[in-house]
Length: 238
Ligand SMILES: Cc1cc2nc3c(=O)[nH]c(=O)nc-3n(C[C@H](O)[C@H](O)[C@H](O)COP(=O)(O)OP(=O)(O)OC[C@H]3O[C@@H](n4cnc5c(N)ncnc54)[C@H](O)[C@@H]3O)c2cc1C
Image 1 (spheres, helix red, strand yellow):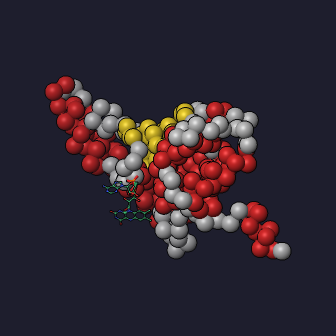
Image 2 (cartoon, rainbow, N blue to C red):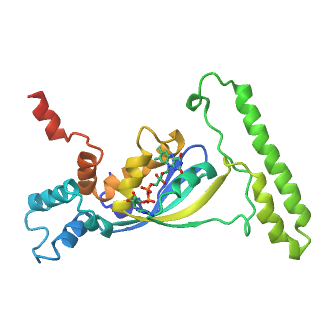
Image 3 (tube, rainbow, N blue to C red):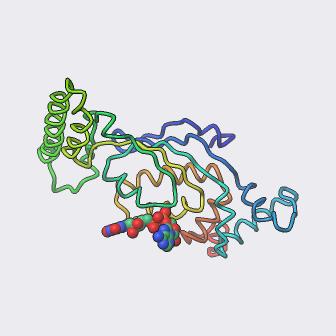
């Protein structure tokens, strides 16, 4: 656990075989959420920590979402294109992604581990998967190179040739999102229905959010995920 959440800034958390999550910056804290909620009455934050905590839990329980919008996270993400496609369905956020018109894609694609695919598949099956993706890149690279001497055709060549690359290829993007929208993302993408690969990213992001706004996160676990709090478990055992 970092002594200050800003110690997380810039730290690269590896995900899948070549991807990552980096928290570039964040704005706000548990206290900022309480301040935002109290601006109407002018009462002070930090005088009674227990009242501040109760207010966060009250806001979450009663779906008063706007105070949570004052906590904002900026991430750098590297993930396979098929994961990015699911990710970018989350509209309440800001995105900027690498371009395949202005940049040539490297030969960098996702290869699942044997342990993460159904046991019916063999090493030979995985090799076949890898060979197809390698071949895609070979053709892509060769044709991009062919257009390289022709300044007037280079960009058009790259923009059409990207269609050769499968969705296992890695992309990168910046993602800025407030905590209210992030809760929706975490809820949906750590849930049982989500694809295993995006779940790996969502789990890392949830762990970062928990360290940045521990009280908001605890309230989210309790009222959105409906996980019993430690105190509830103890009460149940009595
Ligand atoms: C397990 C799983 C399976 C999925 N399968 C499919 C699939 O097969 N096909 C498919 O197309 N998608 C699929 N999706 C994507 C899903 O439908 C959503 O697009 C995605 O999860 C983003 O959720 P969201 O709209 O709540 O998020 P955001 O776009 O971030 O929106 C956040 C919230 O803002 C509000 N909001 C945003 N835009 C509008 C709007 N236009 N009108 C009203 N309210 C709005 C809503 O309250 C919404 O919940 C799947 C998602 C999951 C998690």
